Image 1 (cartoon, one colour):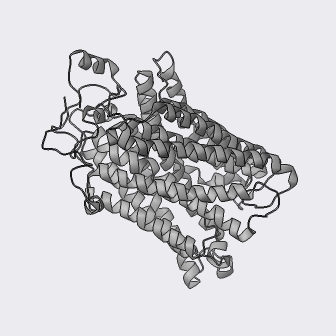
Image 2 (cartoon, helix red, strand yellow; image 1 turned 60 degrees about the horizontal axis):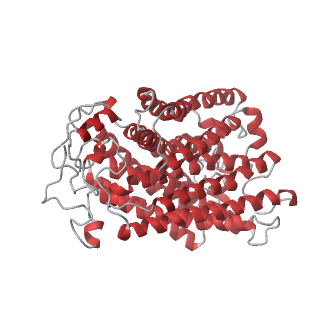
Image 3 (cartoon, one colour; image 1 turned 135 degrees about the vertical axis):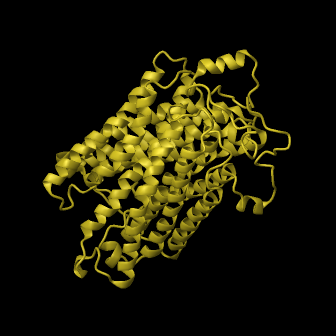
Amino acid sequence: MITATVEQKHYLNAEYGLKSWLLTTDHKRIGLLYLGTITFFFLLGGIFATLIRLELLTPPGDLTNSETYNKFFTLHGVIMVFFFLIPSIPATLGNFLIPMMVGARDLAFPKLNLLSWYLLLAGGLLSMWAMFAGGVDTGWTFYTPYSTTYSNTYVIATALGAFIAGFSSILTGLNFIVTIHRMRAPGLTWFRLPLFVWSHYAAALIMVLGTPVLAVTLVLVALERAFRIGIFDPALGGDPVLFQHLFWFYSHPAVYIMVLPGMGVISELVSTFSRRRVFGYGFVAFSSVAIAVYGFLVWGHHMFVSSQSVYASLVFSFLSFFVAIPSAIKVFNWTATLYKGSISYETPMLYAFGFIGLFTMGGLTGLFVATLGVDVHVHDTYFVVAHFHYIMVGGTLMAYLGGLHFWWPKMTGRMYPEGWAKLSALVIFLGFNLTFFPQFLLGYLGMPRRYHAYPDEFQVLHVLSTAGASVLAVGYLIPLVYLVWSLRYGKRATANPFGATGLEWKTSSPPPTYNFDVTPAVTHEAYDYRALAEEETEGVRVG
């Protein structure tokens, strides 16, 4: 049993005032700071997505010219990838929950944790300055030599913003690795860890090992642009394909920085709302590590049409099919967990179902673009846009919202209105599919991405996609309203409103400043609902 002493004040009320928040080292407060920050960037990136879809309502480029449209999709990509999707789950839910899940008082390096938030904020503000100063038009990939020589926009400032945010990712990953290795509660062996922790551990390895490659690459872009050093520009003796190798060596594993933590969230949701231990726990745990390792071996499938040799492309194609196996293991094992489970269809579980559907669609279409012959046809078309969004946005965002609803009572001590929450989950799922499924058809038919004007025969599908984006926007705004409403008017939450098994549910909602009065001792496996039922039967007080 874990209880909080009377002297331990709740982390929201321990100190008042802006200064206490800006200088806090409490991992829970820092998680909430991240939550507010990335919500702002999500809304900003959504504004650019709205402008893109409005432009594409009609075939001619009548809302804006091509140069401005280039800035719209570049800023949408930069903001969403570097300042929302990558930090979304690790920086918010990971920061808030991992110390509690392993029975610790805080992360291993609390001050570095605070610094990581400031770095993300600084990088985002620098990129925003570039946006207001004139924007950037290179695409979020900063492809050379256009980014180093020909673009007349604010490439250096935007790239440095992403560079600074990268250090936030590195520090967060380092903190997670050390905490998980060194600060687990007595009895919490590796194979008693929640799968949420396993997935964050695997993602943290990518953050620490992969992000420096991107950081160096962006610095090289800035140096070549500023001082005309011949690194990537062929006119100066450089090699533009080298940039693609360096960029995608990080940026494909970065997909798993976004998705792996989401997979950990789904494991928690599927287990809790089916009241069963995750089927094949060991396979699911090791599949996270396998995804992290194999993710570094498949960057070349982004370069099938970029002067890469056919032999190299064949190897990368094979590896890309191979990396799908651990992801398929997770989907299979979640499905097997649900089989004959006692399923309850509460809001977090609806998001879990949405994740499984969208991620499976994105994963299967990934096999298409991993196939040489098909990729040559659909490369740089809306097929790739749809695949990318099903994996990155559909998967990551569904998991993020599912996790946010699941742990919202723990984070705030308040419940949200279940009816509105279920409605929003349904609206988001329908709106997402209406937005992006037509784009598979557009891409197969040959519609290039990043074009603001297009032939008339594509208009119907673009109109469907824009209509879906309108529905999706409503679905995203509904949770923003009722979650803020719940902070004041929501029903007070118990310590464990969903009957889950993790250590984070064995302290009060919201938790005290130092999480636990006494360091907990773990005596049973993860997701042991039989032990939880026995505790409840014996009248053990939780919270």
